Amino acid sequence: MYTILFPSDYFNRNKIDAELEQEYDAAKKAGFDVMLFDYSSWFESRKLSIPRTQSHSVHR
Figure 1: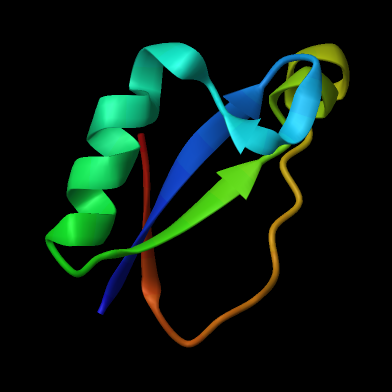
Figure 2 (figure 1 turned 30 degrees about the vertical axis):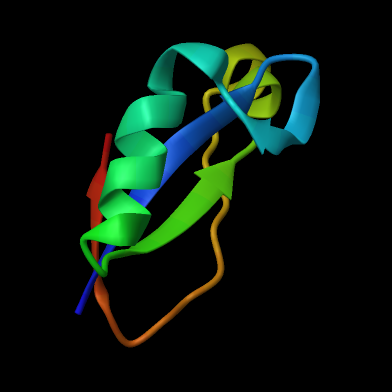
């Protein structure tokens, strides 16, 4: 199964970016695993840390 990575809201890392909320919901409805990454941290440090899983990941 594929996991799709979505950026969080810049000011709230536990909330999906509002511009991508419909895509996020559609991906979940289609059966994909979804994961948020801390967009503000990535933007500031250019480092993306995600848990290691046994799935393929696609960045949105």
